[in-house]
Figure 1 (cartoon, rainbow, N blue to C red):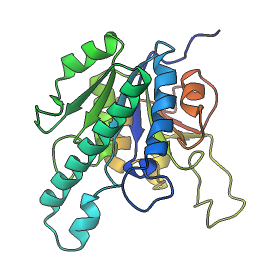
Figure 2 (figure 1 turned 180 degrees about the vertical axis):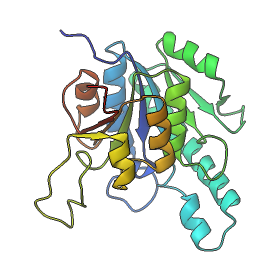
Figure 3 (figure 1 turned 45 degrees about the vertical axis):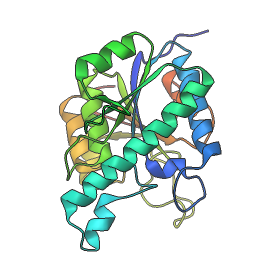
Figure 4 (figure 1 turned 120 degrees about the vertical axis):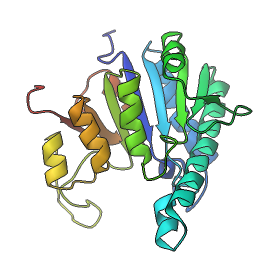
Length: 242
């Protein structure tokens, strides 16, 4: 069997991915399937870190648009990511995985505080590390948190898990026949305002030459295929990275 292309990955999962076809919350069957895919990659010997969103429970930016204080709304969104993180931890551990949840907001009863060196040590010991509460600061998305954590733990790649097969120039649901883009540069994403990750996250990835792969989380086994180096989804990287 061939070796995985990437030794250490940062997987970004949106909160919406955990609710399946429901309109709110966590669907147990969906999170169980996500956990199975992550655990399969862990068993390949790949070091796996996860940043998870909270949009299935609470989205700070949406609440702010209705008049709520933005900082308060964002902190509420961070707490939602902790709920998702604990749910994913439970699903992974029922499969036999060793996990740790690290929160950027201190809540020692349910999660470790985020400490970079400790997180790296957990990864080296084969534990799946789930980063919750975003960056711990309002006005920053969990996409930005994912880019930041990927850099901090020196991941080989940032995997952005979505509900579509990659990046499209237009919404494939409303624009029939539109084709997926296989390769993009960071500047193309920023200049064309493509919905890959927010501009802060893409800029951070660009400044640190962190490749980003956008793929469909809803298709079983795709995380493993990405890790093995198969051309899945859309690759975003610098012009000089091949």
